[in-house]
Image 1 (cartoon, rainbow, N blue to C red):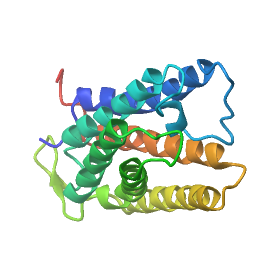
Image 2: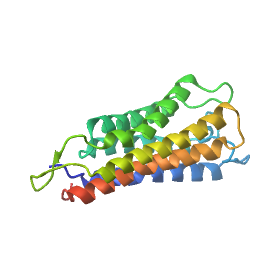
Image 3: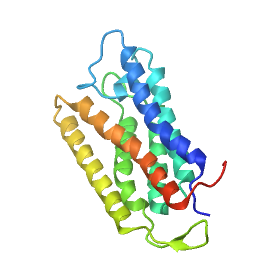
Length: 207
């Protein structure tokens, strides 16, 4: 049975909710004001930030959602699922090592880099190279259109990630904006993949 379970659909849908909902609420809770175009998401969960628990919960929820989705995305190739799970783990690690107001945090920065990179690449590796059995017992290959779509998704994500990296390393004026663009796009791709997989293989029942 290769259908993606319903709980994976819930976890995939929960990822962007935790992320976008987290930064929206956390930004509103900053007493001194917050510039989402210039300031990063991590600044909302940094030590010393007002109500930092809001973004901390948002990021932790995001990481857990990706781990659960990777577990349930049985129709995807193992390499893609592994990268999605790696992102979830890296996100939980960066939560455990929050950004500091002065000097940053090396573990946080490394974990964030791994998370962003893994999520940018995983769609291209999630399409199985071999035929997988479906609910009716037949073996189906992923259509060429699905492969092209997965490659296009990774290309776009890598492009957004590159833009964010340029802004970050040049101390640009759009650091926060570009980070939010790539983070939101990356958080939404697992949901799209789950929807495609469920449409191709059919629902797996109440589980």
